Amino acid sequence: AQTVTQSQPEMSVQEAETVTLSCTYDTSESDYYLFWYKQPPSRQMILVIRQEAYKQQNATENRFSVNFQKAAKSFSLKISDSQLGDAAMYFCAYNNAGNMLTFGGGTRLMVKP
Amino acid sequence: EAGVAQSPRYKIIEKRQSVAFWCNPISGHATLYWYQQILGQGPKLLIQFQNNGVVDDSQLPKDRFSAERLKGVDSTLKIQPAKLEDSAVYLCASSLDEGNYEQYFGPGTRLTVT
Image (cartoon, rainbow over all chains, first blue to last red):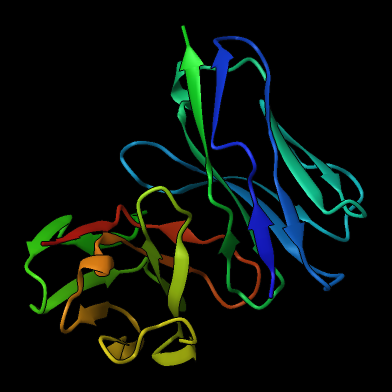
């Protein structure tokens, strides 16, 4: 079974600074997808960024980018120029083309003004 | 475009009572998911529908949980009888189709069992 591990229960960043959230996963599959979801206190889960395992290029979405290390099974999220609105729970998730999303335990990100 | 709708938003019941949650996915989305999110944890998939058929219900506690998606649109998730450990947020999500399409989540229903 696939597992997703987020080793940082909480992270803190100063506004306008950069922060990196860690995620590792375990799978025997070669073709899969990885996601970062954001869950603000209102609880609506929102997709932040996705990465296809077959793509070597790291995905980027505006201030959000990933560092995907397939051999190490590592998938970290970098948030640049952090904003107060970035404060939320962030979940790393895995999908092996079978639709089922497996989530990590989450990282609470706090942004200090 | 309207998002995924869920109701109620909050529910408090006593153990051994029954409860039902409702989800209306985004129009045109064939795939619907129910997740359970216990406080401090990531969501866990309970059941996945493709149109009105069940794709995966391997993690659904079938002795007390049931779900249906009649007509392949709205879905209901029922718990009967509820236990204290069922206290959680129940999230509904939908996606355009099977495969690696983005899943869109509803606001969730927070269930408290006392």
